[in-house]
Image (tube, rainbow, N blue to C red):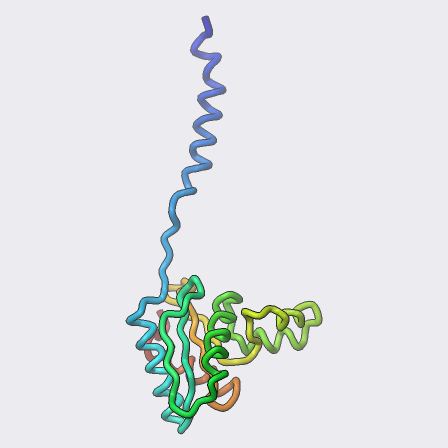
Length: 164
């Protein structure tokens, strides 16, 4: 007959293994809602319009899925995909697409990022953070240059999200 004390190491191992697996449940994360996406897209277009410019604005959630998109009249059709890719680029790198573009130009090891079809190394993509958590990204294209595209997005984020 095995003594009770002989089973203690096995019991200890099971308890340690169980506690290591305790954190394997679902992860709770915030993501961009349709309502917030629409408010951000509208605010981005308003910021561009206030400067006499037209644009396309795309909003993606934390998974890179397109949530909202609007295109002004008379904006080139290539800008629709550009706005989406700028948003995806910003989301996936957790930085503005303009900063990533500048980094890739200065760092030879990062220069090959432009070979990834999903990424677009042009300014206008801005990550969206809420409560310190990355929840999605905005992409603006067609407003007249990378700095202007980014400026429209930043103005909208300040207006809708603020410093949350």
